[in-house]
Length: 125
Image (cartoon, rainbow, N blue to C red; front, side, top):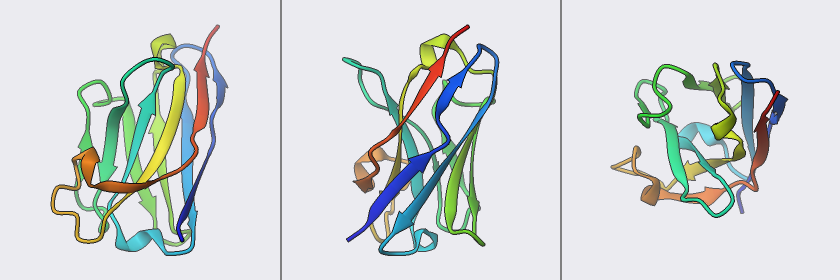
């Protein structure tokens, strides 16, 4: 059984930064593509970033490009989402996700089958 645990959320002022962290128990993350999604209450879930198991390829949604950066830490077997220049409308819960084995379309959310419980990010002055 795999459990994903997000951390690093909190309250930040507009144009501030946060770094989210995802760790797992059960199986190493290093063998899988990983991603991050966010979903505001009553809103549609948005798949904002993904990274291949090697870390050589990354995907970003249009709203994430230039401000969000996904990365892997092989030594700690974690995945991070660095978020800069945050906006109030990005206040929501952020979820870490793990792709299926041999996910051929790792940039597509439908290939992800394990999700964490999320970490709340609040952007407010």
